[in-house]
Length: 295
Image (cartoon, rainbow, N blue to C red; front, side, top):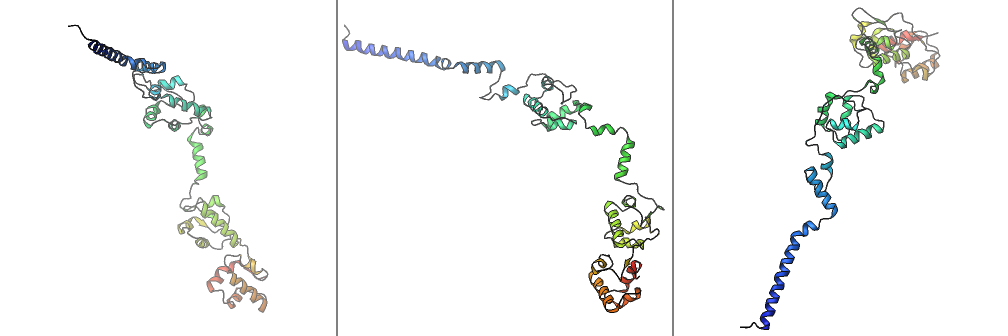
């Protein structure tokens, strides 16, 4: 039976459909490979060459140290070049930071300074610390003068004076702060306070006057002798109220009472005249007596 025209048309449509399917499948299989750009091809080749996937970041490529031999040798971070630093196992970013630090005038004066470089880990520093050798040219110049223990002891003796031992004394009315600091229990603060109080009083009349300085240890008195008193006395009949009250043993009210006593009864003639002034107690008069002049 001869095929009809309709049958031929159907077979033609089926043949066209089959051909179209086969052609489309062939293009799909090779599409992915053919659609890669030249740049993508280089990236694929790079992954094959270096044996890793970097997922869009170059960090792994740049810092990958797997399979690289790490060496250990003595080095000076002030002068080591990039090749030496890389051989030590330092990452390129650390090498760059070292070069930046040095270019800005930074210097490594001691091994611990290497740990301050940005990016250096504790593990990296600990492994390299035993191999760091700083040249003398980069050490502080002050170390050139510490060649022996003797200069160091001399310097320390200036900061920490040798203290007095039992039986040794300083003269209270003539000693300066350096001599006073040799007294056990007396430091710079108390030494200055002793001299300042001596100037305000006009000299010490008794060693126990030192206990009037707040907090001064009583144990220090055994190392102090009064010496020959050379007291600066105040003229009780001529000084103004303002000058009278500058003395540590005369307050404002007592100074005013002295001025008033002079105005009403004339000059004071002796210590006993102070007994007529109610502002002065017996103890006040006793401690003030060595400093009064009635001429």
